Image (cartoon, rainbow, N blue to C red; front, side, top):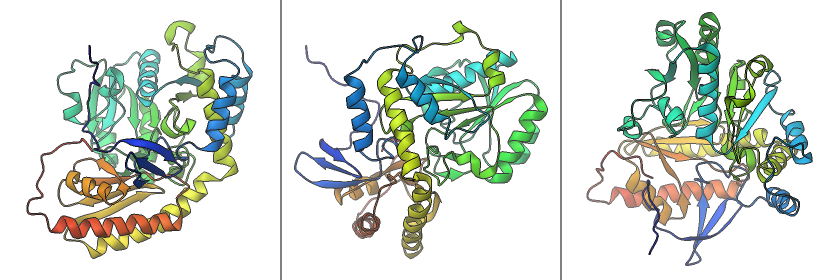
Length: 398
């Protein structure tokens, strides 16, 4: 029998044989600047030496010990997280993916409120497991999977009046991304986040911030919601928190934790020793390297270069959005062909929404990397303009 991969995404067309820092190499020896970074999970760089060292050392101790047992690696991880999590979110539960984390946060909200309705937002993305899919907007992802465990009302993002109108006392929670990633790199305004927080307090709904893509320093803040000064009831994190190793967490208040019992949730691999070691190393690196400041400064520098490029090519590009090193370049057509040409020219990006070229570069990019990226954009634009046919089907595959 020949076993083949069940594929849910389009192939990128290259075979990667090596990855280091901000670069990957294919089997022909060609080097690429990676602004994809595993959907942003490798924000600290491919094979970051500190992460690799922590994983290697932990593999020499033990691999499969659940959080039911006391371990030094758990104590160290919790200690480091205490240095970066919002101070009011004192309890964490570890899982393996962002979808799982959002599932648990929604599950907690339903359990503690007894309500089934969730308020989420147009263009939101929170995962593809059944709970998280309930709060994911894209109809293409949702088709054929109903009924969902939650009754979700989707309302326009950054529209405070819509939240005021729709959010009532029959809602368990509001779940939102401080910067919508899959939706097109759309930052929330401070006023919008503050209004959502206030309205949640008024109606007794939990406020869940999904920091899976925007968190861990990428936007110039450790957590993107901190820019607005809000205090969510729950926070979900994944991707970069373990340097690219599969890990996630839900952070909640002490008051929420006190109302949950032992059998309310569980995970075989959640909080496994390797993940804990990787998270510990990643947090230490975040602090030692002042990653948020680097993301702020480098994002501003790269953003200035890309904004200038977009202004010079308004016939092809509508605009440019950014929050730190979370970058979206909006095209006037579907970006799939452009992304393929860009990859051929040595820069790997991917899609967000319907027309946005998404870049999630690692914090360690250099000024030369930025110039290389813009040069690739210039070359690709010149090639793209010569193509006879640029229209593409509405797909979210690259």
